[in-house]
Image (cartoon, rainbow, N blue to C red; front, side, top):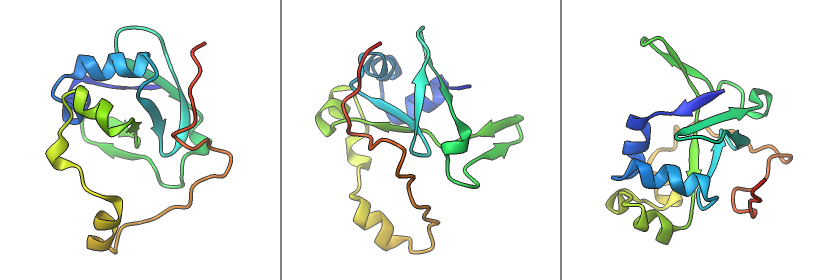
Length: 122
């Protein structure tokens, strides 16, 4: 279990509360290293993930002390703009990869769902 704290959410959008609501309303999908997560109900973004579905070496640490895991928010561009997202920071994936050939690339797991599959509220 882990969570996306306020400073992380503020780094994603100028209005962290809108991001939280977007996750709760299933507009924004949350994954960890491509693995599906279960988002717990409540006021923030608290999630649970099967860490065996993350790529090898996905975890890091900081001296806080804290473990750090990859977390992704996937949503349509228009929804990101509506959240107050940092639109001027968006770059095309091909441009990012071309500019940084040393990036470590891990193949995705075929049993992890593609982030654009419809989500179902339970």
